[in-house]
Image (cartoon, rainbow, N blue to C red; front, side, top):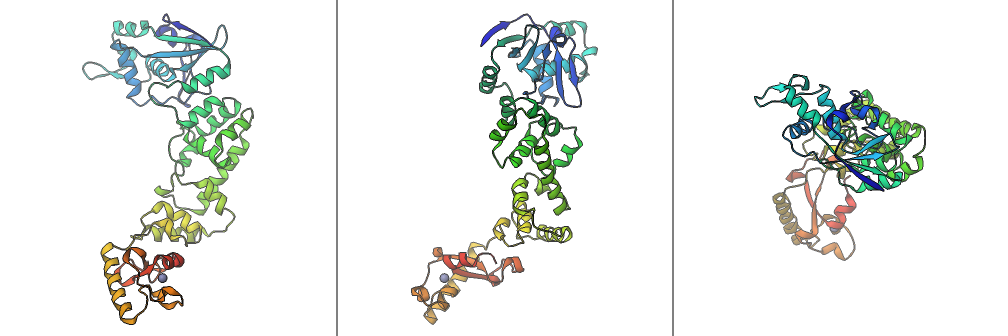
Length: 387
Ligand SMILES: [Zn+2]
């Protein structure tokens, strides 16, 4: 790989013919069309937050260094931004009047309204650019290893870089665009942001059953994302047809796994909804995120709900009462052991060897209070489970 340090490229040069795509949130071209600002393996523009983009402009005005920028020379005429896309897009957006920066008096000023000297100072600022020339794989490997200034790349952003090609381009069109109405609906089920490739990552994770890298490598040159999209939509459609109410805790669940495990079972959405609402109103349910899988599984796996356990003081007093009674009768203090016929029939367990159990199962309406508490030896407690 050959690298050349260039110190002659100015903000003015870069901003010549700057094209920004508002819809996709991408800086596209600069340097009179010779520079591709956002190659397909680059992350989307994430500086448009009124903080990081403003900081870039303030740095220029104060004469602070902007850091190294890397271009990849793809032909004698054309280059693409390897690192520095966020900074360049911020500069281009500012110079083309897309956001304002506060002046000394705290007034918001657009590029067009600031003093000519200031404007010139910005336009004449020289950037520090490394031009790199080499094989695609070298460039990508290197891109993967440099620590990008500012926000570190997410795993999926790296995967997009490593497996760049038509498949990634199509995947990003579908899953990485915040303006896409589908992605707004998907937000009820998926955590993170389309911008940072969280949606694309989930889609790949689900269709590949967790083998994202292998899947991306196999489909790298595909000219369609049909399988990816169809599978993803099946998961979301299934989730939204079984659970008709959208709850906050649905966001970020492993919907792909739930779909695989339960989509062949039939559900009555109205009954499901009533069951979910009942559990939402239950003070003993500690883990609301577990409600959905609990209901899908037929409302048996209470451990998914992390039902509130008995207080330590409750356990101690129930233990003392059971122990006194069983010693009088000469049987085990675990009522189940006492009914058995083996050596444990008369065993007195220590408190540490016992667990509290709901006499009347919590799932059948039994309360978590002292009247419904029974101490069992660990073996019997586990065997009884959460019926
Ligand atoms: Zn027992």
